[in-house]
Length: 247
Image (cartoon, rainbow, N blue to C red; front, side, top):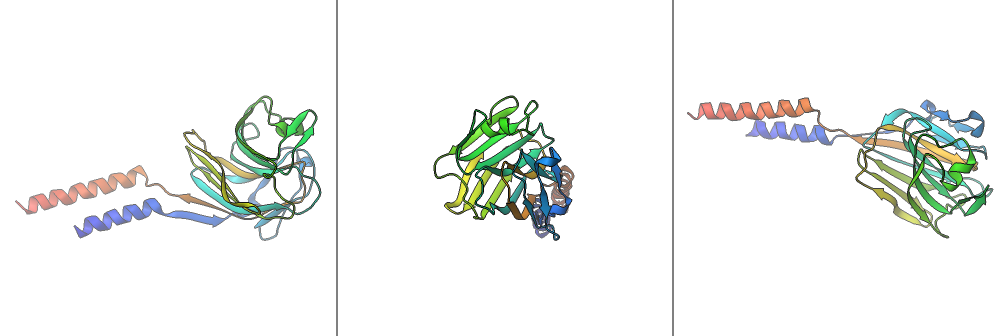
């Protein structure tokens, strides 16, 4: 019985081990038109400052993720402008990713309304993500809005640091914001999804002086089928030995 408990404990430990670590932003790359953004990574790789006020720009990890949690801080270090900051995840190219963006105040541009607050979208083939127009109003081909949280008190504030948490699994998305007037608020919570693994990254559109700092990722391991098989065989063998011994 002691051996059974040891094996069971070992299996549970292997299934629950979490792998957490700081993200080295020196390993990331800009995506989209290179002239749209200027991502300046700190020497130690723990932070990046984007300094161009222009068309949409993306800064993307080299690694692909699923069943992960991402945490870190971000904010705008200027009182100039009021546009879009945010994140991408499940990224498999400019025609396949989730976009979480946050606008400071409502503004009409080229006939499209960018609303104060949060938008979660799924971007697919046909979306022109290198242009301001489509992503400004979250409309047009290849843009599927999954959730919105708009209002006069939902915009980000100048020179304020916010904590960001993303839980991205094969079936769900949960996004939390903490800081300013937000107290660990669950902005979006979606379940019943069929998500693919993909890269994680940062997003700015028509907004400069945006800093992202101290990002970490954490994944919980799942026991491999071979581990479960070995465990089952071990248990079966122990019971067989006990049965033979008791005869």
